[in-house]
Length: 281
Ligand code: SAM
Image 1 (tube, rainbow, N blue to C red):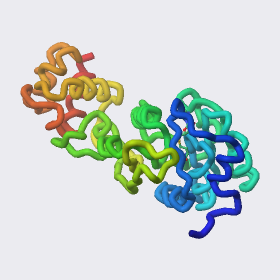
Image 2: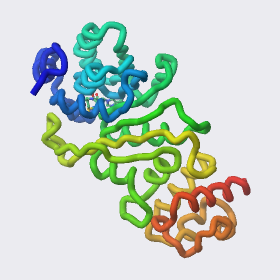
Image 3: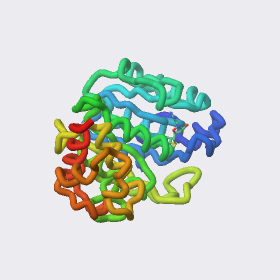
């Protein structure tokens, strides 16, 4: 296996800096730099973009991104113990890596980035899902990012790319496919990580569309879809009862039979429903 840089192997970095994985921070580290370089390549045009990396940990993906030619990387990491290891990477790539210590859910990174911007991350799945939903639902579109390349539990990745009628289809699929194109680009077995998690993982690559596939207000669409799938076995006229008065009229306006179940309804009809509800507010 060829070395991707002349920094120490990640096992040694973890040893030197005492980075024993913490469960509370969802730490499962990738130690194979050839694998992190592959994930970095999946992120697209690195040389022409600033990369926002969330949760760099000991820096496996960070090194992959830099070795593969990223113009600049801004990395946000919550665990202070990782800072010395990340500083070593910054010293190896002068002017190309900026590290911010803090919680990615609370930091606005935009002041530190120059477009075009791509996002790459291997995050604990709950933080990843919350950030994904935020990145997909800003009021204005296109968003600050061109693409998102994110590691998830395989089951969450399947929910992002799911088609109507499938068990995995729900709010994540609708929000992701409404304004972006999404595909799974890499599968990883539990043994790719240290420590190995219980489940398999997958990398999802999302590219922002220039405009949403169908018009809708993101907050209303998100609310309507969340209610619809909250009781996914119920007919929509029942599960959506609390969303807006006269929900049967809105379903009719969107061309959705009131007895339909959420997982049978396609993106276009969800957007039509959200528009009808928004117009009556
Ligand atoms: N990117 C590294 C890799 O691939 O080996 C680490 C991945 S590990 C699954 C997740 C990383 O996200 C950890 O380093 C953890 O400390 C960090 N993290 C967890 N919650 C975070 C948050 N809210 N903001 C920023 N970093 C966070």
